[in-house]
Each structure stands twice: as C-alpha cells, then as structure tokens.
Image (cartoon, rainbow, N blue to C red; front, side, top):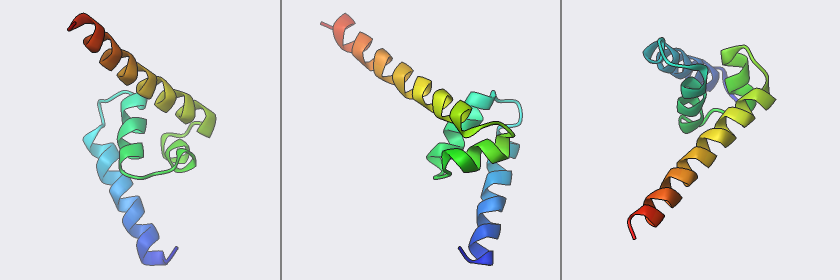
Length: 76
C-alpha cells in the first residue's frame, strides 16, 4: 500500500470515529467494517483484539438475520 493510500485510510478512520464519538464500540466496529476496514485494522483503531471485533460483527449480523426472520414469521 502506498503512503498516500495509507494516509487516506487513516483519515477516513479518524473521520468515522469522530462522527461516532458517543457510539458504542460495537457500532464503531460495524461502521468501520462497512467502510471496508479489516477486523485487524478495526481492532487496532479501537484498541482491542481482532477476536473481539469478529465476535461483535458476528453478533450484529446474527441479530440482523434474527430480526428479518421474525418479521417474516410475524407477517404471515
């Protein structure tokens, strides 16, 4: 990765984290993931481990699917 790309990526992370200042760590991880950051990069930015980030993202996806499934069954 070139120096310019790395710098752009850091600026993007800074902007996202600043916008999410009062958000939970989970919400920050989700938004950074949506912006294309890897679990390791997110972990470094949030000062945690990649395993914790993976778990947060897994639970967020799992919760999303559960909500969709419950909407389908309740709408019938």
